[in-house]
Image (tube, rainbow, N blue to C red; front, top):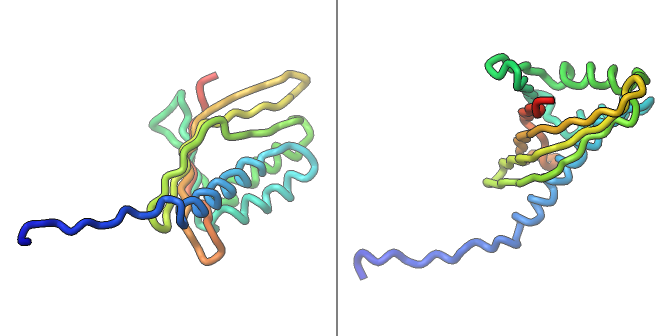
Length: 155
C-alpha cells in the first residue's frame, strides 16, 4: 500500500539501557563518595580522577551571583577540596544524592540530582543541599564524567 508507514518494533527497554543506567549511576555514586573528610582525602581524590575525563569541566553557580559562575578544570577542582577535607578543621564531611534521574541517549548520559551534605567545623554541625547536573560519555574504559554543573541552595 502506498502511504502506509511500516510498523517499527519498539526498542527493548530492558536490554543495554538498564545496564548503562546502572553503570552511569555507579559512576555518580563514586563521584559523591569521593567527598569525605579525613587523612585519606587524597586517596578519594584519586577516585575522582578515575571517574572524570582529564579534560572535564566543572562549573559552580553561586545563588547570590548567578551571572558569575566559577569554572574549574579537573585539578583546579580537586586540589582545594583535598586541602580542605584533609586539613582536619572539617570533620565528618559527606555528600550524597537525595533524588536523581538518569537520561540516556546512545553514548551520552545526564544525571540530574538533588544532593545533601553534612559536616562539623569548629565544633558546629553544618548541613547544606543543592542541585547537580552531571554529563557522562561512554569511553573504551566505561562511562566517564565529561562535565559537572552545580548550585548550592541558599543557606
